[in-house]
Image 1 (cartoon, helix red, strand yellow):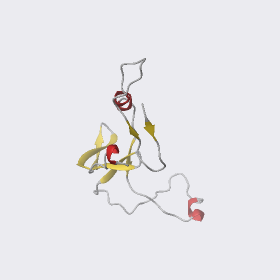
Image 2 (cartoon, rainbow, N blue to C red; image 1 turned 120 degrees about the horizontal axis):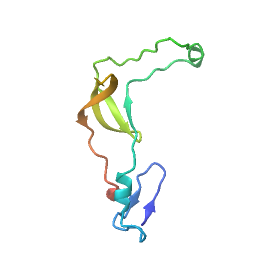
Image 3 (cartoon, rainbow, N blue to C red; image 1 turned 135 degrees about the horizontal axis):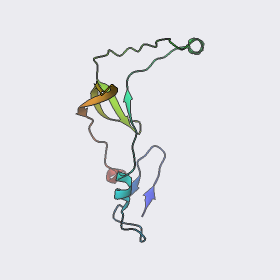
Length: 109
C-alpha cells in the first residue's frame, strides 16, 4: 500500500493493495472508522477581558437566528447543511442540502 501525505492536502493511496495477512483493503478499514460530525451553531467573539468575566449562568448570544440552517462539518470540511430539530429530547439536525464534493484524491497531482 502506498500513502502520500502533504501538509494541507489529501491522502492519495492505492486501494487495490491489501495486507497480505488480511483480506481487508484500506477502503474497508477506512470506511469502518468513526468520523465526528460537528454542527456549526454560530460563534461568539469577545475581548479576553470579557471572557475572563464569564460566569456560570451567563448567556452568550450569537448573530445566528434560530431558524437559520446550520453547517455540518466532518474533519473541518462542510459536508452538508440542515435545520436543528429535537429527537427524543436531544438536539439533532435534519439534512437539507449536501455540499458539493471536493476534488477526488486521484485528481491531486
